[in-house]
Image (cartoon, rainbow, N blue to C red; front, side, top):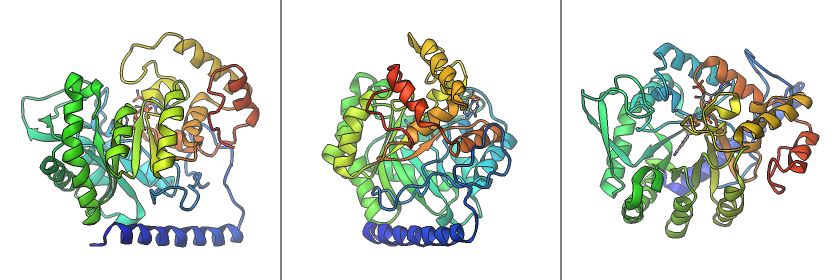
Length: 381
Ligand SMILES: NC(=O)c1ccc[n+]([C@@H]2O[C@H](COP(=O)([O-])OP(=O)(O)OC[C@H]3O[C@@H](n4cnc5c(N)ncnc54)[C@H](OP(=O)(O)O)[C@@H]3O)[C@@H](O)[C@H]2O)c1
């Protein structure tokens, strides 16, 4: 097994080779980057926006775009197997190579479906992340649980110990049926999930999960690790007490709400050479026109009006709200990828197509002039 240094050097060499071959390909024929593709596109052949070489320690992803795994786990409603498979196939056909999942997503269902899809695909051709923090237990009495729908057949308990971490990764490898997991996130270590005892769980993770993930990284079992959370505090705590590579920051960096991450998290990530992956870039659907904000029907005050106004300005500039929302989250230098979830193939194609739309600079200027986004928010450009 390669150690971490060898893994990174190897990955960098592989990416350099890929970039070199792309450069040659670009010299051979016209580039289709920045083609303005919209709506329901089939067979997109233009390139995704790339991460500049060595922009971050996280290497790959090569592209600033991936796909989330909550829909594969039947979030909000049952997603039939065929729809899930078609969604993944649409991603793959359109060049998407970063896939995120978790044992928690549908109590193992998301990992099982993703593993089935990746079966037979060369592991060096994709980037896969999953998570630790919950251990699953077979339990026939469990059907829907919270936002996860259908006959799930598993319950879980939280476990952020070293032994629980290793066990969780071994379980994930078996459910996925693939030989590697590139990134492992410590999942949901937040007050929102764990209540008032969350600091005790954090202490357990500091002594258990964090050093164990660093060991597993050294052993070459995983490539990188970090936090996969909906808050900032635990990301900061992890950077203070351990050596993570990447933060999956979900729900707090999006078009509607981003100032805290911009001001508190990104500078620390830069200081520590830690990359960011943006989860829930569409606010769990709100910014794609769904009337749901972050996993509930409770839409915060002022959000309807703000969404309508941004959508109106987008329309005036010939683009759409979802496209603005996705590109906004991928823009910061410290962001290695944005990973919207897609329910079906059509959504997957639309989201992927959004990444190649050319957005006029005047659109972002107007959002800033009207105070709709932070003055210092990076915008694509
Ligand atoms: N703590 C963590 O680590 C954490 C937390 C949250 C998310 N994440 C990760 O981030 C990923 C993305 O988050 P998310 O999936 O929860 O939220 P999201 O990407 O913000 O929104 C996904 C939802 O938006 C709607 N949507 C997507 N594309 C659309 C399109 N083209 N047209 C219309 N509607 C569209 C769909 O709603 P419908 O299904 O209703 O059609 C879909 O379920 C997750 O899948 C997960 O991998 C991680």
